[in-house]
Length: 473
Ligand code: FAD
Ligand code: MLT
Ligand code: ZN
Image 1 (cartoon, protein in one colour):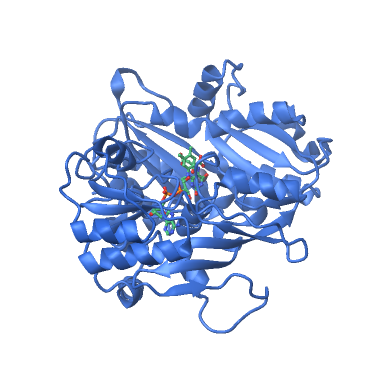
Image 2 (cartoon, rainbow, N blue to C red; image 1 turned 45 degrees about the horizontal axis):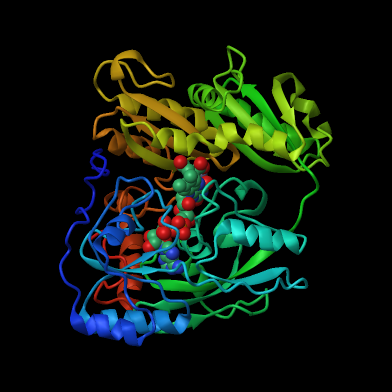
């Protein structure tokens, strides 16, 4: 079963997790990373962004150098206390808080921010730097950081590398894995891996840095990342389109590309979600009556809107000034927050399928969420608190964010099963975390799982780092 569908019940509550071994306390202080032990602070740190996952934190430390991370892990190993790694704590799969008494290692003080290398178009940053800070730093050098997401003000580069974050610019630049040129990480056993500063073409053996990307803190603590940056695109136009289905959304995106438009983003929101966001933002209903989906396209066309010619008959709004673009983007970017406010949001899932399966996936997901009971789970909120499936996502990445509202606790499991049956993934960009550790076998073979466990055991034989995340147990 995924999660269990009950907010706040997915980890042991914070409360009094017990005393921290004196020896560990002394070692942390000697390492220059004195621990925070105030129970009220620890309770907050032990609860994730969704408020649905919480666990007992013995103490929290925030080292500011790689050497301090080495010392913190050594102290934890010596005392056998598990370590939970946490960046900006914006993860959506329960991977940023512990499920058993643990030392919380926060990366937020790893704030190195080097000058941009204009020749290589790279920058070396500390793992605790936020996406927004890095984006501003890159922009000041006339370049663009390739990953952007609504959590940009809190999400850290280390957390984004650890989850291989996607977001709204994957279409243009790929996910986090494609931005990482190198990194520094302290493995669970204390060894330090440094791959930043190497030439861009370098095929000398296993790509160890890439292995850390998407490892969700199970292999090591990433302390620094060297990132590729991109030439800033020309000024852009944002357009909202009404489309009947997701095949229509993909076709519209491809038509703009075929006409020479450089697509920066192609995002979808179902009609009910788009209308709810419009109401919250006090904007008019953005959709014509028969459109089932709102499609947002951002095109780097110098702000002329010319690239939208092939889809002009579907366009319902256009913006090219920064405030107009932001107003249109808000209909998409506010979705996470608006769903988070619903008291009966049972689960949120992040799935992907190949592009030709998108509409089949939407139908199968809605049916699966409804289950064998009477009809109810659909795109519109029904009366009387019946189940409701909200969907938004990154259309041309084949990535759907499925919000199960008022659903039964087994709905998420059924949804993941139908997605896996369509050959899709149960985690497109948020990671596996604790939420889907028990379901990893739906999309990875026994041999692949055994190899993952062998890699983990090779650097973390006692299961010190992030126990329970990704591989379960
Ligand atoms: P955390 O939440 O603190 O941690 C996430 C995982 O990474 C945990 O397992 C943690 O142990 C591990 N970790 C953190 N830092 C390190 C480190 N330095 N070394 C090793 N392991 C580490 N995600 C997307 O992919 N695309 C989106 O579009 C997107 N939009 C979002 C919008 C909102 C409003 C919110 C709240 C979240 C969104 N997310 C999205 C999810 C989240 O922002 C990402 O998963 C992000 O990468 C998490 O970064 P973080 O610093 O908050 O990491
Ligand atoms: C998004 O694309 O908005 C995010 O991945 C967050 C979410 O799924 O809620
Ligand atoms: Zn997303």
